[in-house]
Amino acid sequence: MSPIRDELDLHRLTVDEALPRLDEFLHAAFRSGLYRVWIVHGKGSGILRQEVGRYLSTHPLVISYALADRDRGGIGATQVELSDWQ
Image (cartoon, rainbow, N blue to C red; front, side, top):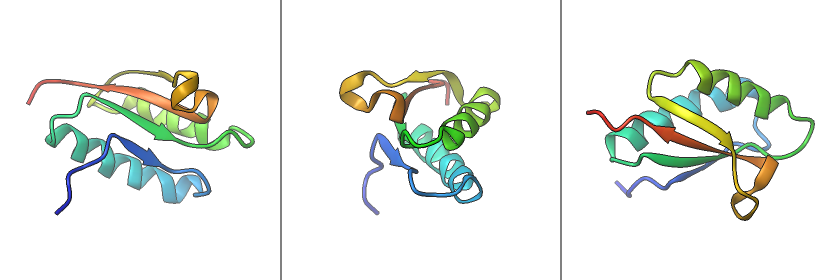
């Protein structure tokens, strides 16, 4: 099994396809000891970005999230801080 990356690319997926992948990724990142990850949702119409944000706002492993810095995708990506308790 390859090590988990710190970035998940969801753009071009539907919300129904993206959210289960996002959940799996967050849990895998947490188990691997990653505490900062990036979710690429694309710029598009903003629907996926909104739904990713809504999902992150209630996820128990997420401490905070915000749009990524410009060099990490700006409005097309979200930076997520995960809990560090195991």
